[in-house]
Image (tube, rainbow, N blue to C red; front, side, top):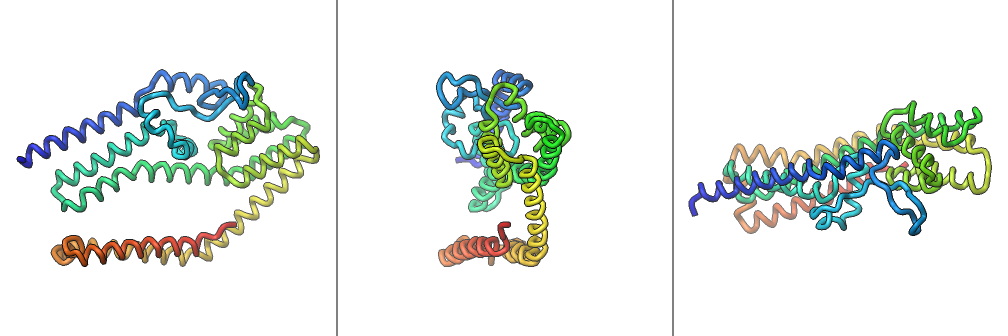
Length: 321
């Protein structure tokens, strides 16, 4: 077949996929408007039925709109929760379609640029993984910001309780004084209580939305205190002090393991850098790794050993506090 025809077909498919991805991203306006109107009153994206049928109107996490993409990818609940934790209001079906469009676009770009055939799927995988990397980065940044804000929020709650205010008023004060993401999440808890959701359920939902161990300690402490009694302000002070001490120890560990982490980055990046340099200097020499059967085996073994080495280094320097 004529190469021009192949390029034309590939370009058409790529453009069609990109357009479909864009339409999926901007589609579902009616559902988004409904979610926004609910958020104005509840701070969440949807309303659920509750633990039992007829139990009343309870606030839930964002619910996906019933589109064909969500019926196709609706089983990816963990990925959907991961996306929500990054504060990205995108159903998992649209996200998967967008990632597939990105990967197809990268593969078509490699084909148009006439790179080596073995590099075309690599370019497709690289561009297709960019949305996942973006979600991972946003989620990590948001959870880290939440963890840093949590001690101050607990101190503010404790002061509010000592001043004679209720716990709900303390949540409202935190939501007004502390910026996102913690202020938004605590404000959501306050709004849920105004709608009649039990505090225990609101705290459990908060702990499920934000996978933070210290937050789970806080939720457990509040629930137990409401069942057994005790000085909640003192408990919150102790949890806040414990979190601050943990951050201090974590900073010391980061300083002590900095050399090991830097060594790991160098050891992981050096083979790739040398590969690129040798590819530019002597392309035929490097292409033996792809054309020769023994070269392909050597390349596969090298990649596997690189992955094992990265996991070992990460295990050594990743000390949990």
